Image 1 (cartoon, rainbow, N blue to C red):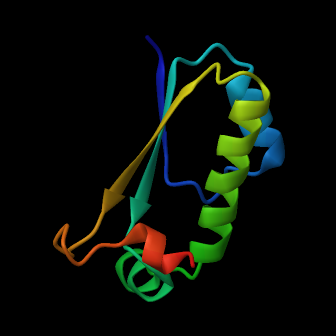
Image 2 (image 1 turned 120 degrees about the vertical axis):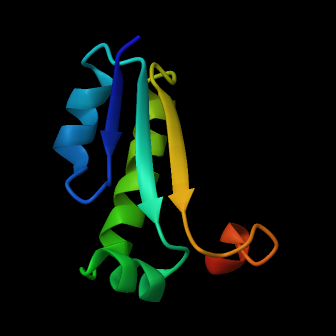
Length: 91
């Protein structure tokens, strides 16, 4: 199996399309923080909205292509699982 790790910042539409057609078995996106403020604090850049948009596009495109690649999102945060609520952040 061939894996690809990314922080998602440069995962634009063209790169996503190329990766999904490349023969990769898995793409792992490392998402740091649980919201824009924590992402900026932990990464030192204000790219949260860009990263989220890139992840959403990657997932939709993969679905459109019949899910050829196993996509996983690893969330790195200092919050406990009880305090982390992804669905709450996107309502």
